[in-house]
Amino acid sequence: MTQRSANDEIAHLDYAIACQEQQLACLRGKHAELLAVRDGAVADIRAQDKYLAQRQTKKLAEFFYAHSMRLVTLQTSNVSQELYPIAKQIWNCRKISLPFIKHLHRNAKQAFTYDVKNLSPSDLTDLLNLCKELAKKSWLEYQFNRKEDIIEVKPSISGPPKNFLNGGWAEETNRCLIVKALDAFSKTHTIKYKLFRDVKLKSFDSPAEKSHDMQLDLVVEINNRFYIFETKSGCTLNISKWVDRARLFNHDQHRFITCCADENLNYKIFTPFYLFALPTLEKQFADMLNEDFPDDDATPAADAT
Image (cartoon, rainbow, N blue to C red):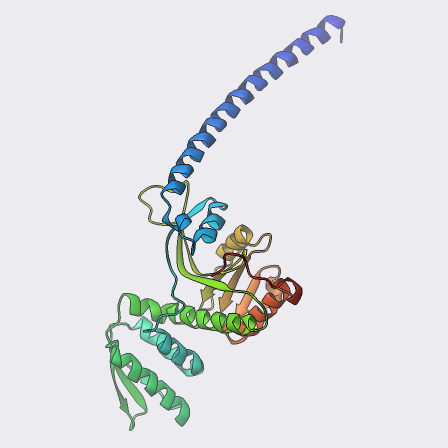
């Protein structure tokens, strides 16, 4: 290569670099403009955010703002006084109640007969008691045909009751077990907690017409930590959503926990993600709390209520 050709090539490269730097500066300027617009929009949202203004929900709102989301709605009652007794009843006799309510959900408005000839007397009593409670809510009519060992069922289920049978019962049970674990733990540790259920969130970049982008079954606030619970009553865990949410919320001192009804799933194979089974949830959560709040560090936040 001659001196002249080398000089020409250097000049070409210098020109290309200058063009790239000009384009980069332009892109940086546009990016800064977009960030300024977004920051302004977020500032407007924050100024009108009732959850930021309330002491009860301020930390929760700030937590989600840090994840580029804002609270849309939430519930603060621990359990439904109306539905929890039925959820507890389903859970206590789950070996016979779960097959029945799955069948009931599939035939929500269609009469059917349910074979009970293989049930023990105590299991049959449990199932008939459940039918009795569902009948009190006008979710079904039933009659036990002792001669043929069948239960004749005429369901009338839609809307919230159908959602309850499709997994809402597990969410109610899950909340109760979590509260029991927290109450037991707080007797030996100086902590206070808050529960938020049916938490709906909207991303900053979400279209205006979209009501929300994410729904969380339960969020527990303990001091400066947040424990987010997703409850699955069926066999499908929806691994992709689980992983996405775990990666989003499992950081620093916060936890995203999936709860399932199947105690036969080995939670260890899902490490580093957290899987709690309802039959062992109290112990698993207690173990996590003991690890996160050892005796010498179990002090309540100054504004915890």
